[in-house]
Image (cartoon, rainbow, N blue to C red; front, side, top):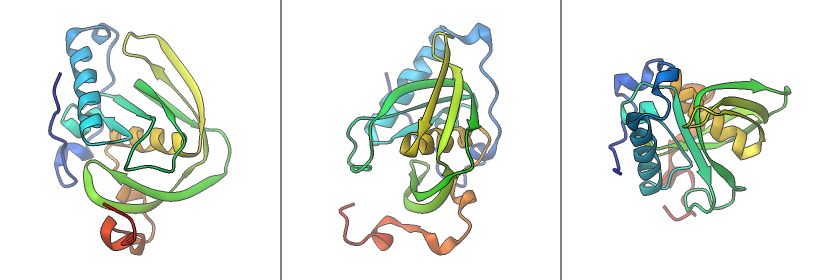
Length: 176
């Protein structure tokens, strides 16, 4: 389909709360095109996930998945997923801190604490119910992408801004 421009931090639409996808919108050409464009955009930019608001569409649609990715070479695989109208439930109090990046905050990373074990539910692109448990990087990606639907970017979750910066300054030994 098409690679769409990704909005960058500072764009007001990124801070808005997205609208739910209605039953009538499932299996429409518009929704299929949106999802195809999201996958094309995510692949072109080597992302692990993408939320519709990042391409200017204020709908509760996220995609994510990682097989092999040069931006995240050390992470476990995450199944390619379309998740519509997601709900995230934290399953225990354990958290993990790790570095996050975002296609809307290019070239930067920040240390963010997230729940380490979650359950997420919602719907596939056809409207079929979807429900999974996730841990580790998988859980992190889901939480990060779902934050976008509520107008939250990962830098807003960084408690100490000394742990936020440009990748080449934070990790000079790694290729960028």
